[in-house]
Image 1: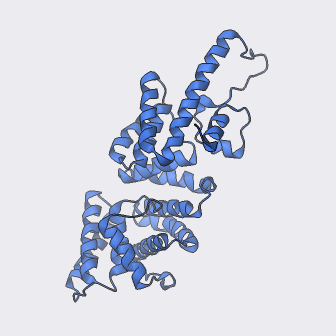
Image 2: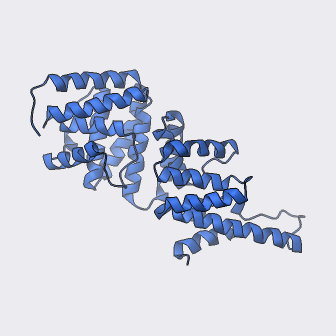
Image 3: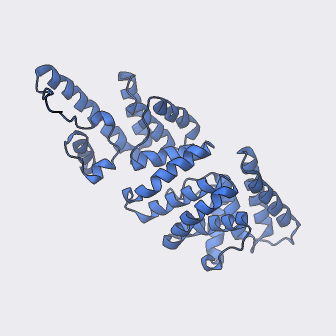
Length: 313
């Protein structure tokens, strides 16, 4: 049985008035209420009613698939595939499949579906769909598309009621800006400051501190000591990054950027661990063809860590 949220989405898919919440929902254009212009038929004929009933059924199925994205993205993808087979000309099932694969972190498989949706002139409009697109673009090294999407997304953060989600998106946007190279540092500064100022979760505070340290290193300035973490918090963060295991509420970022952030935080405690993380950071930057200044910085910090006296964890 559909829950309260499901009923709300189905209802908004079929309702006539658009509230602010509905405007921010992921309701497909297919399911928007038809506005009858003066002089047009009111759509009450028998054939019109049959057509509208079929459309309502499709909208209900689309709503159910979208609802599954939050907790069961694999199921959402299955429902969307069924709709895609039945409605090959419709783009909405393709968009849900792209979002489902993105939520499952199958970014390489998701990106071609995002491209198909865009070719059919269906840009992600809702904040949640826009974030999925931005994440997939960033994780498939489509930096310009990712940054453009985050610029559209940041003014819509009220769509997430949890401040942890908002902070994660701000950190994702900051990294997307930094990946432009030196010209992106000013843009990244604002998002990093906003996330740091509001971060209360231990994990997110460490992510924000590490990315801020990476920003400072790339800017060539000293890191802000006001955001210094204590040793246990640093080691906890570094252990998660080393193992590539972190909570689902963390920002979705290229792993190699987290390696660089962790390397900077651990340098005061262990050159050995820092060197390992710098190595992984540098390799990721090379593979991604990252801006040359960032690759040069990683190589320099790697050499410095290797040459320093070894400190055991």
